[in-house]
Length: 179
Ligand SMILES: [Zn+2]
Ligand SMILES: [Zn+2]
Image (cartoon, rainbow, N blue to C red; front, side, top):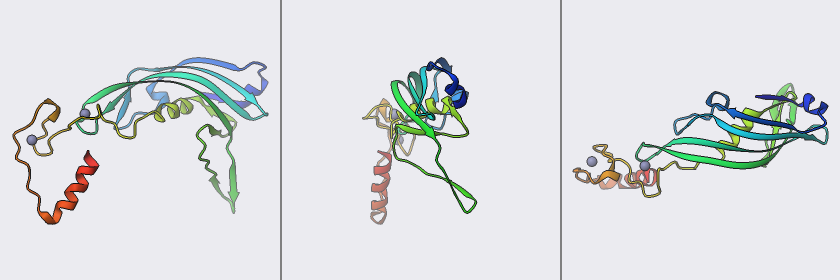
């Protein structure tokens, strides 16, 4: 959903939008997540200082993650409000080459070509809430790496593998990565 900044400029009142953003609009699907239905959002879009866009709104997303330990899907609800500002993208031209300046501020984003992509705004707000590590619960025991049994359902019959002492540091490292 694209908003023309020139159209905002002509409006005396902020633009109010209430819409359901679909999976196709948002493109947040990847290996760890999918959306359970469209994401309803309410947005108030206003312009100030000639070209700065303020987006105040809220969203409610039902997201499905895949647990990185046991590989089961688990749902999470993401419900949040936000107050964001978008400025025209500062593009610097250097010997005919274009590159973008990047800013660490999370609250200020940029738009290009006099258009603000609201779907991208909403996707970004959802992705910001994704956990660094997707686990169904803190103490998820994961799958046995020999037989693949879900160890949350109980122990399996596998013997602990004896590790070549020369490879032990490697096994420790793997443990750290997996757990
Ligand atoms: Zn799990
Ligand atoms: Zn096993």
